[in-house]
Length: 530
Ligand code: IRN
Ligand code: FE2
Image 1 (cartoon, protein in one colour):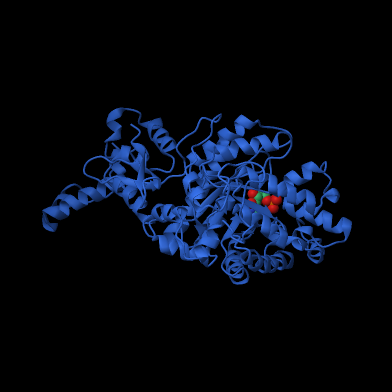
Image 2: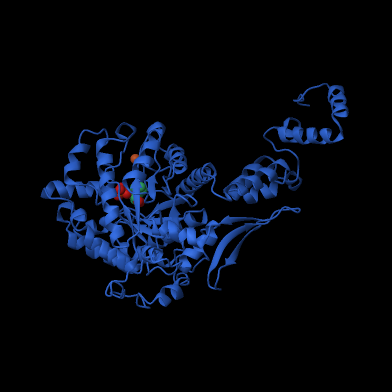
């Protein structure tokens, strides 16, 4: 019954094989190809094959074998970043890969990266990754956060969550692990991940100094970034815009500083009464990230954590600084995205995108929701998917999911699925609104299947085929119901789709016949229940 299968489209050379999920349809309806993030599947003990291995090797700018201290780049001034190549006019195999994935030309992909409007987060030490592009001209992407905390989860469980999140369509995954076995957990995640992996290195740096933010230093942070870059982390959240003078701006807020990284850096700045070391050492950090092609995700440490605090001075002061840092990172050929809120009511969402695009020179925006109301704990995947759809429509490139457990606890498997599905809906709704070429073909195929009562096709085209099928079967489990021209929602006599189909038939026979027949039958559109 499952007629979804993985197909590959070959690029200009045989090892550029771009995956799609192909849905076969009944009758003479052509198959539909969907963007596919699930990867080739791996044995967690072995990891995925190194798809990008030959592409990285042939560029000759990094050592061929991974291990401490291997990257060679930087020594001769050449930086192995996709931004450096794009600026030099080179279309890398990675760029060609995403061009096929998105249905765009490779030159367009290269030019968007060169302009800083899109990023390709691909660490030279993550050859297992299937390239995915993040930028407003492309499909809106979804990030899912996973990670162990001090109180729960094992390494195996986290790899399982990664696979589960990408199965439902997560385009990137962030490992926010803290506590024990943090290095080992991340190693297992990166080696098994077909999607870019992001982290927030300050979390691990904090573990290294025993959990006391005051003991943090640039040196501990830098070494943590190198450790994670060696493992292959593709992008890193860095809260370099939480400046000492901005911290007092958050004091009178309803919810103060809600960002974990933001509160760690604010505590450090206040305790030392010194400027944020991520800001003062930013150029050195750029040099490290450039060596591995790690993409910056400049953190929004002062994002609003409530409707009352949206679009305030603290938030926008930090955003201006992120714009300044973007220019510096670009001097080093380092790719940049900008993180955004948080909690924002619908009428204040557009201003966020407009200011971010203006102040940050069109670097891709990556937002956490935003939640459009604070009244629904346990349903914040919904309160935030509303904001995510809107902010996506206005030009946000990636949406960080929120699960039903937000503000309440650590998400389990079901929460991860609920969050990813809610965000895939938001992202796709934004793709439609933006008129991304090809986005509507999926809707049209499903609508047609629905109208023609091709139930199996409708299930198979669904974002969540299993749930769609099970809801249908809960009331009409028998096999003939899969071709019946009604469902249990309205029953056989009230189905609007059925009535419209009859109308079409009448129209084909001539309006006169049709109206006679209609009047003879009593002239009612809705028939009384038998
Ligand atoms: C995304 C946009 N703004 C924040 N995020 C994500 O929130 C960020 O990438 C990370 O995954 C998570 C927690 O970040 P804080 O609380 O440390 O800022
Ligand atoms: Fe929140």
